[in-house]
Amino acid sequence: MSISLAILVILGIAAGFLNGFIGSGAGVLIVPVMVILGYTQVEQASSFAVFVSCWTALFHCIPYYIRNHRDQEWICAVTLFIAGAATAHLGVAFAAESAPLVTRLGLSFSAFVVLDLFTRHERKLSRLTVEESAVRVWINPQANLVKYIVFGGFTGFLGGIVGSAGGLFLLPLLVCYAGMRVKQAVYACLVMMAGSSASALYGQAQFGAINFELGVPLAIGAVAGGVLGCVAMETASEKTIRLLVKLFLTEVGLFLLIWGILS
Image: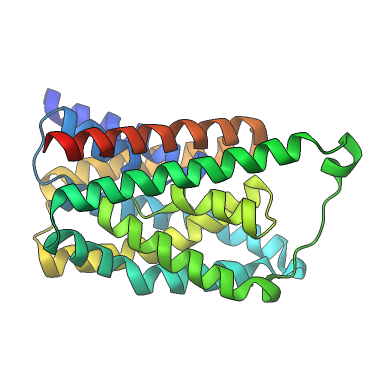
């Protein structure tokens, strides 16, 4: 195995682990690292790896929704899947037709806005008593259908632009405005990204050739890493997941800001 191939596989493992652990989309790690390492056709390579990673995660998501079918969480998942699938290819088209500076600065702004919302929500939760925070309140998915459609469509569109599938943007919105607990939101993000990644892959096929030479090694690593990430997520604390979400929102915001200015 050549050094470059090994780097791609290792990057895929790390990105897939992150995807399964916090429902972020593997692209939030693949895109910055590949740009820094000087790879070209980043979006064309990441779209395939993200697609494979997100669909692999369904093997963990589907049993979760079967176990919790009485809570009707599957309604949220299906709605988000459809919403993400409806818009991600539009994000790819928008990125292909727009000035890179506009898209990257817009995405950077979105990342920092979502980060601010998530941080404010954390402060609100910190004021709750132990008893209040421990109580699990059932959220009626049917009462949030409009939110799921808007959030899934919006973040799927953003994911199509940046090549990440959009989960990193979606998770804070579900936690802040749909009343989900963090791990519930991770599963919902993974299902949404199954739809958005398929849509984005279709978009890449329409607006630019998919780079399988780079994408396949990334995807192989992302599958292995994604399985480990999903297993780790189930045993991790919500505090750890929240911390990583904030960390990578900051990373994505700064990277896109710097990339936009320097490009």
